[in-house]
Image 1 (tube, rainbow, N blue to C red):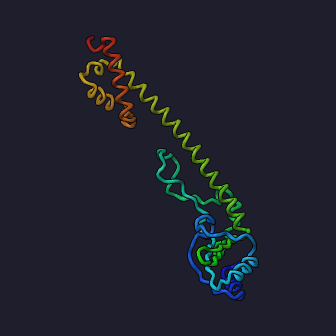
Image 2 (image 1 turned 45 degrees about the vertical axis):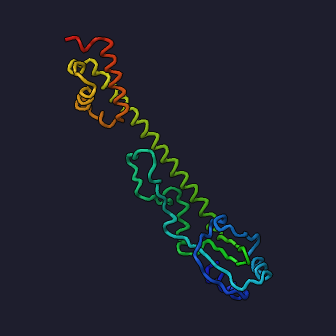
Image 3 (image 1 turned 180 degrees about the vertical axis):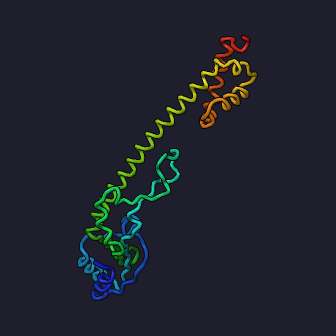
Length: 227
């Protein structure tokens, strides 16, 4: 039902409809009493309550409803080959969503509110095609999130493998005579950072711990005293 048709129907029933803004999808947001029944039954109930004015909110399908952006501010580092700033058109994930593009600009959900003394009686209605659209939309979003998690896991494993390789090169410096004769751990770290590509990408606390461990091994084996 188009919004104009709904307004006409309410006017013909003897109400003065006032269009207002508001969330027409979240029934729990307002906290009013939610009417159980169809539109005709709601009209009968509103008349029984001797209501003259009703407030009407609506929502239409928008082009933006077909797009989904990956969450910003994740704890995960950026994923290679995935542009999180570029919204994903969900029709490319589930092609069946494209059939709903013909509804863009059309009303998909309504809320009619009858104001009582200390409460409201709210009637909610959603178009059948919208309910089908939402089901497919949720399925597409779930798939996008699953693909994102899989990509993150691959990237995480790649980072861990690269870190392991770099740290192994750091530990091998115990065989470098120039390294083991350095006087301080700070000098050792500076030497290692200059010597090993990618070491600067390792967390500073991890590097500090590794240098301390290597220094302890050097001292235990007396390597720093050997010439």
